[in-house]
Length: 442
Image (cartoon, rainbow, N blue to C red):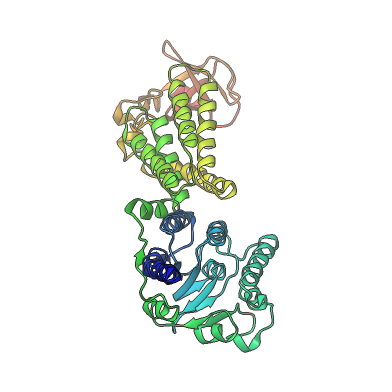
């Protein structure tokens, strides 16, 4: 009897545990959907970092990265790849359109890959900021990263190398000789670069047995979208160029205000984007305002030292906020060149039309009509007779009445005390000719 009570109590305990399992299962099996769209850059990295943190806090059962990207920048792709590798939550890449260049690198760092029937993956050669193939050093490092990413998920690295190196021989999967490898959905599944082909996330969830999971879509906030735009390596040099040009104009035309406002606004947008993207810390902002304070102090304490320190502090804050020193340094150099050229163009072609340049450009014409006369023009002297006070070799001095006048001969020598006739007046240049004896008698 006693044994029967123990058995009954044990069975009730088991039933309670079994009733709790669905609840525990539901808590741990929400699925987070994180889109990977447009260019791969540092702003996207900050967004994905937030999405993974939210999934980890919720103890999600899986994260699906919905990929459609033409690629992007290697430094950002490396950072995102590390995020995928470090999370303990199972990661799945669903390529719904294109995973090219840095996009395929991210997909290879997920634990599993699924593709839409019309999707593609590949074409992963490193391109520099000029749009050309990168140098051998960068190219070699990128090929190594691609191969390592493939091997980390037990995939044949030969196909990853063919995606990043046109010289790798895989003729049956290439459209033409010398082209980078791009795999379609069926080909990727055939060579083991995809676990399956599905038409939608819902079909993927059903295939993985996650159809009853709670779906949590991670969307970009407005500030994150703005930060992605402001931290784009194409936008950064434009912002810095506008900032530098505005500050230069304000330095040469103090008191206007508008160029300074535009310059400071562009500079603040640069720092705002990098702060939201997690690339800049508040130390860079403090250094920025310190530099601006020193530059303002230069107007009241002449000498140049404070101004030089201020400029150095502002440039240092920009480099510190940029995240990647080399990329930011290139952007700063581009901005300096663009601002200098912009200043020259504005002064040369629009200086007389724009009122803001009136303090550094002489807008009035120094002609006779405006009252500017360097020397008196004396056409009434033509035909008058004079006497040479000095020898003319060919320049010298003549006497006309009681007045001594500088003059030149037609080119020949004229001695002192000779009678001459004024034959031409060109501003301050008075030309004379020696009189012949016949002319003197007349």
